[in-house]
Length: 128
Image (tube, rainbow, N blue to C red; front, side, top):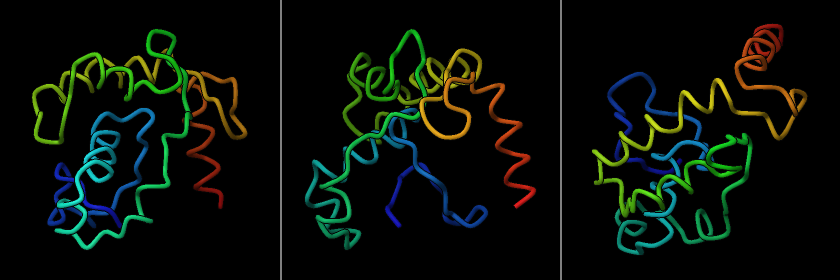
């Protein structure tokens, strides 16, 4: 697992999925780990655990493209996970638009709006 400064390990399991293409916190955490050798060292993260990985587009948001977290983080000039106010603003800009206007780029629901795909994916997960 990779560390994220915004995840509380004392709440729930402390384990979450990471979607750096669409979640600003996830994107910035990945970039912190890629760009800061001392941070990797602090958490015993080997280079091969982060360096080869790039953002994989999952949702297209018309206003922000296929990598909304990257786009908005760059627009707001977010530099680290410590930019909490800017990250909150980035989430405000992307999350609702992603849910209501976002279109799935992968999987069985490819081409569907996220809001329409979510109940289908949820039911499939419950059935399995």
